[in-house]
Each structure stands twice: as structure tokens, then as C-alpha cells.
Image (tube, rainbow, N blue to C red):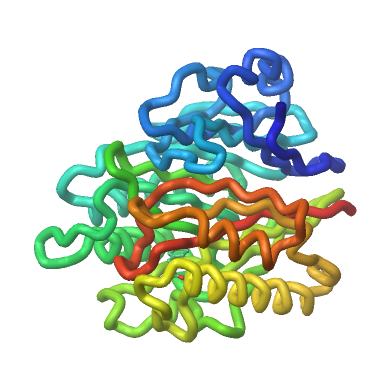
Length: 339
Ligand code: 3EB
């Protein structure tokens, strides 16, 4: 059973979540229309489709409580290749890429190299616009050489964008950055031949403008991106947490953090609605991925989401560390409409 699927339109992106046992029946479709596969499990997942860029991430699903595979699909035939450490696949409009690198002692340097490789690939293949990036690496909140690893990651990411002559404010991809207990740095991304429209959140300071108290370099991401293609409007909502302005609110209170996060997502959808192609999007047009810090009870978070989101909204809960130690929950979303 597919847990969810976005209705495909012409040259459209969709995402589905499958149990590993369901993959063999999908093999033919994945070979022709698949863009990439991401396994979420406690351990290295088995049986990911070998024809696609793929990796396992040790952010285990906690609801449903079983390994899941996130599959990005196109409605058009896909082709791909391997460029250095990056496995990629594209459909003429979108390029999906997957990179893993040993995240040992120098997360800053490893991040910079990874993002430099991503920028080079996108320019070479003619999909220059980074629309959405997912980042996962171990011990995200650990201090190393006097600076938290997440803050080091931000230096590496921004330096790579600067060296590639890319903007570090304004036209940035939607993103998320989560901590895992083990494993390498995993960066996977969706890029486009055409530029996306960045959306900022009226309740939140743009992350790329965060003041120095959150680290020597600000995080390089937009609150959301809106991508128009022939037959589809796609919206990627970045990881969103209980941050208002630039401050974390409700430390230690997961239910209150969830309510604040939902208020942030609602405000973002309001901002999205002011864009010509974003008009009419509602919370019902998205599917959600909620990251919950280990040791934090799931039920209050689930309850807050159930009372605020439309009844049919699909939410996948994963366990992961959030990039500020006081944050317990972070929620991202993907939505699409056609035409
Ligand atoms: C925040 O709003 C919470 O560094 O790529 C959310 C989304 C967060 C993306 C990133 C970080 C990132 O600052 C953390």
C-alpha cells in the first residue's frame, strides 16, 4: 500500500512513501520514471532500487513505526548518471541528486566540498537552480573545536555558495538540516532548469539574516520555494520550528512548540497565497514530515497536529535531532497542484 501519493500531472513531481517490501512491484515504474529513493530506518535499509540515486538515513520513522522509503517520481522518463560522489537523475525539468560523505571531524570542510560538488554538477548539467535541499549528519548539536557542528555546517554551506558565485540571501533553496545518531553527511536535493520563487515567513526573520548569536554565518535557506513547470505548481516548505523572529520559543514544551510551528506554517501559506501561482494553496494541499527529537513524547505533538491540520493530512513522523538544542520538533512539507 502506498502511504500517500500526489496526483501526477504533466511533467510533474510526486513523492510517495513505500515499505521496502512494496518496492519490487514498483520496479518497472521506478526504472523509467523514478528520480531518487531515500530509506528512513534505524539501520541501513535493504533493497533500495538500484536504478535510482539512493541512500539510507538513520532518522527512523516513529509513526508509522517501520522502515519507509521516500520515492521521488516524475511523470516523464528519467535518465541519470554519477558525477564524482553525486548520483543523479533528471526528467528534462528537474534533477534529483544524492551525495554522501564521511562526516568525521571536519563537518565544515566536508559540507563545503559537498556543496561545491553540487553547484558544479548543476551548472554542468544545466539545472542551475537549487530548489530544495535535505541535509542529515551525525551529532549536529555537538561542539567540536569550540563551535557546534550545525554552525560549522553553516559556514561550509555558505562558503561553497560564495565560491560558486551563488547568492547567500534571497534566492536560496528551501532546506532542512537534521541530526542523526550515526552515518555520513547525506545531502539530497531537487534542482530545476528554471528558477523557483523564494517565499519568506512574515512571523520569522529570514534565516539568512539571523544575527551572530546563532553562529558566525547565517543558514543559507529560504522558508519555502515555489516552482512552476508546464503542468504543475510545486511548493517546498523548509523545516519549520518554534522560532518567532529569530528566537526559539517554548523550550521544553513540545506541544507549545508544535502549535507555534503550525502558526508559522499557516503564516507561510498566507505569504504563499500572495504569489500569483500560490493563490488558493491551503494546509490540505501538503503532505508533512515531522522530526521529533529522541526522548520527546510523540503523542502531544500528534494531538496538536491532528487538531490543526485537515483530517486527511498525511504526516510522517521521523526521529532526529533538531539544529537548535532547545527545539524538540520541526515540520517540513511538500505540496503540488496542477495546472
Ligand atoms: C530554523 O528555522 C530552524 O539550516 O538548512 C530549518 C530549516 C532549520 C533549514 C537549514 C535549519 C535549516 O532556523 C532550523
